[in-house]
Image 1: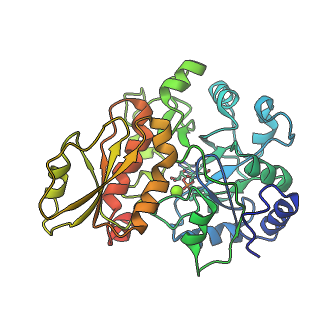
Image 2: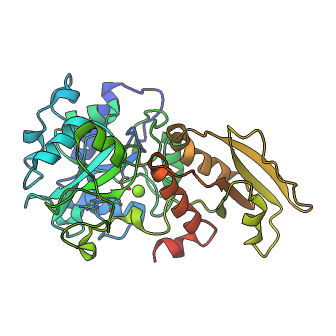
Image 3: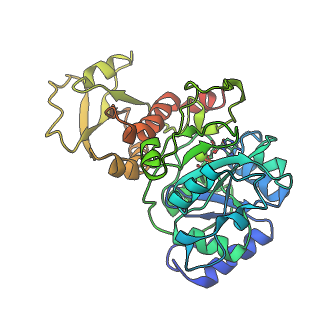
Amino acid sequence: MSSDSSALHSSAVINEAVQTLRDGGLVAFPTETVYGLGADAKNPEAIKQIFTAKGRPSNHPLIVHLAAPNKFDQAQVDWVPVLAPWVRDLSEDALKLINAFWPGPLTLVFKKDKSVLNELTGGQDTVAIRAPAHPIAQELLRKFKGGVVAPSANRFGKVSPTSASDVRSEFEGMLDLMILDGGDCEVGIESTIIDLSSGDHPVLLRPGLITPGEIFAKTGIKVYLPGENTSTQQHGDLPRVSGSLRAHYAPTTPLRMYAPGRVLDALSEFPDIKSRVAVAVWDSDSSLGHDGHPSVHFEEVIVPSNSTAFASRLYRSLRDLDQQGWDLILFPEPPAGEEWDGVRDRLQRACFGSGPSSSSHANS
Ligand code: TXA
Ligand code: MG
């Protein structure tokens, strides 16, 4: 049943995955951001299985993934008929964003069509939609001819998977899951989410590779940050985003960030001695330049000082380090600048939720 690796692009494997979705089963598949755990967006029982498999609270809404029907023109698609069954109204801004960034790592939140299942929206009257750029995701969606809900294919609160084997280890022993193997995810952190449902201003719900600055440059649309001064104040109304919990994307090993040159300060937070510490260091710095600590063994791990490259490897590094039995993992604080916002956001939540008792935070 679980078929992966070798037959990367075999259409027989994709056909089997399509059949699994039609039969109400779950299929994990690659996207350019992270791997998703997919189910038929029109099948309430299949959607319930996703929440059970992830251990995710049922009021946390899912993203519907769509592809245009024609294989050859994903970049020049008329998205209006594709979206019509899902979305109540498509504003001019929405179409501009879609034409500029789809397929790609941008999720948009709309007022939902009444046919969209409550099971997937967490009972809200909005729906999040994205058209992934990964060719395997597109082929799966095109052949399935419908919407596929897909949260990141990890257990709730844990690090999102960026390879097929990451997905396998998340659900090992609990779920006989079909996993399509598309290699390592290029973007490496989840899609940018923009809320268009208020009809007022677009609001950034989750930072990602696509930044408000890039959106403004390509479309002239200004994206507001949550709580940023808009004419109608509606903070209380912002849709729920599980990625917005303070603790998320978390490893089991304690993780902290250190300010430039302040590795030892980060250690002082821990009353019990940490004897084996992995310290991530920018590739642009020749070395840590600290004086060491008599009872601590530090090991340096080089991380890219380019934000896109850093994001691409962030979850891979966190997973690998988490497997290596360190007492503590230290990452450098990302520099200021919106190109680092997605990474900073994920690292902060990962720090907050990290450690053996992370699940108690993650559910709070
Ligand atoms: O890159 C991604 O977006 C990946 C890949 C697999 O597509 N998916 C992903 O799904 O990150 P998930 O479920 O792990 O995160 C989706 C986020 C959640 O935090 C959820 O609360 C939010 O999107 N979301 C879904 N529907 C929403 C809605 N109607 N309003 C506001 N937020 C919504
Ligand atoms: Mg997730």
